[in-house]
Length: 191
Image (spheres, rainbow, N blue to C red):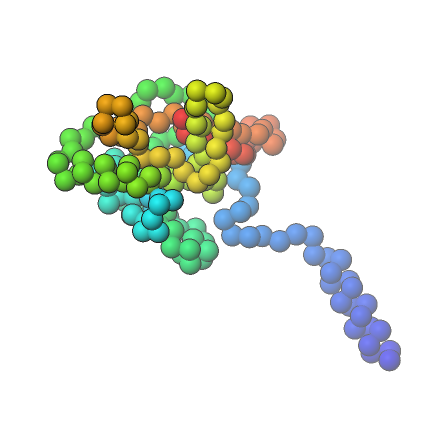
């Protein structure tokens, strides 16, 4: 009986010492003004088909040092995510406008691949600090922020009968200054 009481007291003391836990890839990161913020890309996905494309299977701009896998945890691997680096150079709290990432000329087959992706409603899936990109959708009635995964590769204009590729992205990173010169990313969307 005495041994059981001692055991219960030790177990209770053990639980009193536990103050938190860590999930890989979820710990908040603090950025100083001017720190590099990595924008990563994931596979292209569609709501019309279950077949994802590797992001760089399309003729998107590639990083100068080459494409490298950036999976951060086992969950990303198990869900089939293909997270890779990107050529985007973002800096915390540094506004930049109209930077040219690259210029490419598409072959007929590459253009056809983009048209197919637009017809099947494929979306980019970008990630900043483990936060997936949202998109801002403008309609004639109102402006709403959609937090569904990703943003479209392009659109088909039925009036003129042409496909248009979204080749300009306004990247907006929302942050909270947690401590002096310590910023945490709290939102990320693409217009």
